Image (cartoon, rainbow, N blue to C red; front, side, top):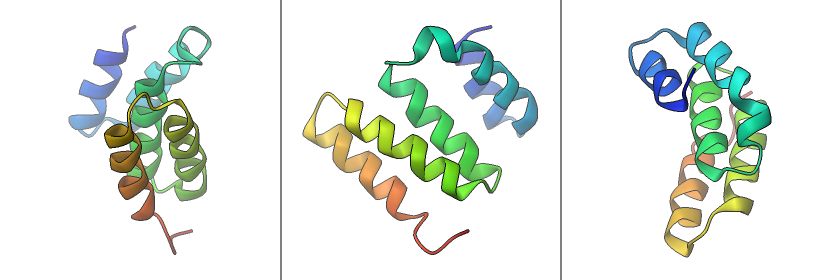
Length: 83
């Protein structure tokens, strides 16, 4: 499995398959910011807003630039008030 496949599955609407694919990569990508950003987006699409917010927080912490961090903060901000 690859992260690209997981994102493709998510974009095609196969959220559970995408989630399984991404979860399988977790040990290898633990410190990789795009993994956490993709996971946050997927969790948000699945309606798991609190888990998505936690994944965004990790992605923000790992962001390598101010612009990446700002983008992720805006995405995470869309979760405010959702449960």
